[in-house]
Length: 260
Image (cartoon, rainbow, N blue to C red; front, side, top):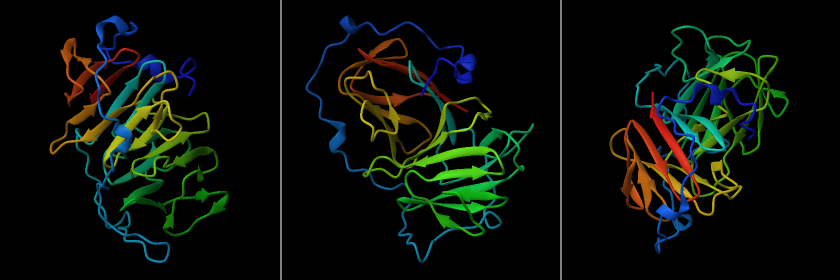
């Protein structure tokens, strides 16, 4: 992702600190590799190609909770809209919209619904939607790498890169922005993995290790880093909990989390 031209960085939160991490402040410890963690799906189910256990948008009442979405800002990488609902609606970014992913484009107010079913995702077209250049008229299963065309111009790519996690990513391929502005959308299931590997949900090529952000019983996020980090200006352990507005800094990385 190229953050130099990204509009997301014009909307950094006021608590964003642009300074680079100081490696001398951090002491490496023998932390267990987070790559070996087996992630469980946050939404149990066993969807199959022949039988999809889904609820249509008409059966689903849109419920907005301030703790269900958030903004993840990763220094030198980009900004990401994080949706923790099992089902999200994509639609036009109009005032007072209730859709989870508002797009600044020629879409209807509620254009399509993407829903997690077990470890897989389905898409329900409310208005015109094409998947892999084929127009769909009913609920369809999404596959890693599928390109979506909403209306006549809004293009997205669906990614589910990590085999052990149900979390997915929507990449914006067209020039359209979102509200709030971001570089991509993360559909968080159990956890989000940030690191240098192409399988990670947020690819941070200059990082030496990885950070895992996972759900807690409440609305907060728990972090797991390969070594001790600085949390909100104070020295912290390899694991901890991010507050509604948190800043996490390691020897070669920094990120900020803001609940919406």
